[in-house]
Length: 322
Image 1 (cartoon, one colour):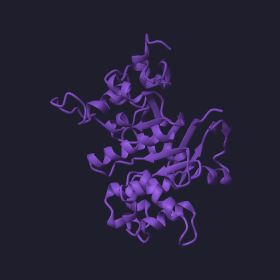
Image 2: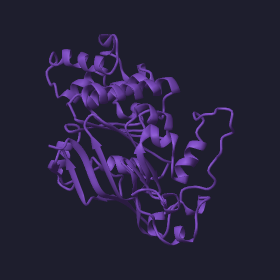
Image 3: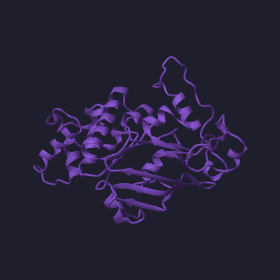
Image 4: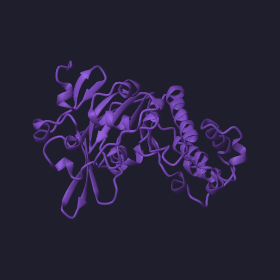
């Protein structure tokens, strides 16, 4: 049996005064057990909408649809409440960006984990609570049990939230910007922890991030999103070392963590267009140095360049193996 979470033709749109506006346009994505997959791109490109829609979650005023959705070889419907109850937490865990908002300020660490475990009795589950805290890297978990969220650092809160997400034993984890509010040292610790869960426990981890260095550290596959579509995909480290899409190149050039460090940063002029999915042509054409006439009249599709490498850029794909 195939052990993977896979969606094809996923679309997410939101109601506006001028009608429905697309946020994700027919994206295919596959996350395997024991593997990592990162999604990167500018704010507003559809990363979080895509990731959260895998759990049937959309913001108020939004709608989602998918041509197909399978988990471990079984077809699921995101429109059925019983399906969503089975998926959320039990099969697929969720790690949110703002741990201070994800955790209840009135509950201690122990009570958070008891709630996640479903332990109703006062004395039940403490051993399991301590085990979960140790699993996410706490050396002295017993010292944390009575603490409230505001008594923890940002990195500690994020690990407590991760322990809650792992409490029900999911096979997959969606991490939505898990390092965004952390300093560089704590961010690296969280990514290292996620990578260890992938390797040691065969957890499938999908991470949404602005941080290209975090995506490289986590490893696995990388999808680059722009204006609701995937424009390039491949092994994370390989893609970041040898990008093919002009947008991926621009993201790397604007990253302070890239080498050589003495080169000046190159900003990407302009901004991602709103309503790009309702227009013809490549959404990146107005900002792209390689754009030609055909780029403004026909929308590129994601084509296979080589095993594991896909690209949606006709000028760059010409002459490459399909």
